[in-house]
Image (cartoon, rainbow, N blue to C red):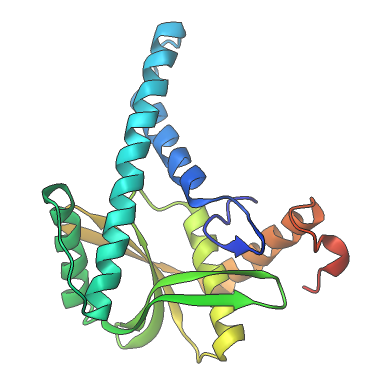
Length: 212
């Protein structure tokens, strides 16, 4: 259940962003060589490719998130050629969803459950209040749904926010995939993972202080 990556647990994290991106790179390269006979030479080649792809994913994600924040705040930004297709995908989402921003990189946290993080986007999507988590990697994973559920729970606790939806915005070259998260399903799963994390000693709070 360290898969609730991206949600901070003060003063620790379940799994930091870099490890999460590295895991995506591993999955991508392993799929590329599925069915091949693994020998020392191929394993060495895969290791190199994983590290190369990790750098690409990491740096692209960092740049696109920074640009997305600037777009919402109305501050200047520059787009390098390799990021331009992803920014076009982001603009397409904003146009087609009639997105209206209510906040960018909004800090949220839960005193009850002792974790926190930052929402990429908070705004109006399809005529409803929604939090939107941006992904620029190779796909949408189960851990992403848990991450959105954690943000939703913290948003409600901190701001007594009205009913809202949660989305994963998977940016792709010149397009996007908008995945709605079933919060009623995922929030209990998130809390179960969080409880196991504390029970396993993931924080000073431990299971003795669990109030879920």
